[in-house]
Image (cartoon, rainbow, N blue to C red; front, side, top):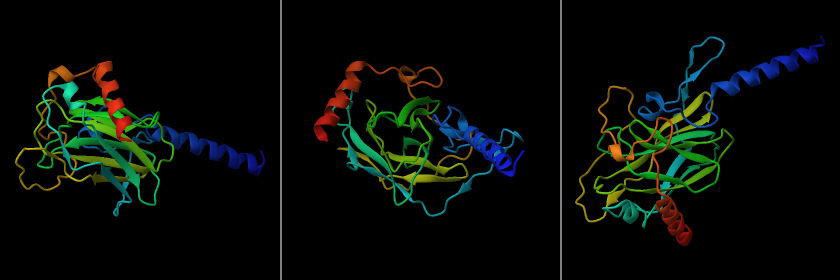
Length: 236
């Protein structure tokens, strides 16, 4: 076998190896991803976890269309004023992400509902701690846009927190948006809380009425999806 053929075989083997280490179709529904917001990649040859090299300076940010949300009492009412949110690279591309809406005061509960605004780049999954948005493909991205609406009766301050995956071994946890306050509700001073690092952390579970099958988003009525889509189309 020629030296070129040897190099070609090695190159193909490495490509196959690293392609299965990542999650090309989004984060899996398990504690490491959903509660801790940490990807865990496994080397198929050694069956050992691959150590992530966490980036220090974060070349990514989360932008929101406004820093407040309107409280609501029904799902239909909540869908009338969706917030537009985007995860953006600041001079750097990224391949994967997982994002939730959490209270700055602590806890791992993910609040509200997510609606992808770009076809084919993100999806909603039902985690044990609430609805979550993640990628659908591990291609290079510079921006991901989505809409978010609060839950009926929700009156807590929230902020979006994400882990952004630049490549297999470089991740950026703790990417935060500005804090969102509910309109007309007195606010208290809070500080950002880093993503959970222990599966034993206290979690306020979502109401049973929004729970779906593991690995799938809870059923949303076509009316709510259509309503949010129509409102976003008017705002754009």
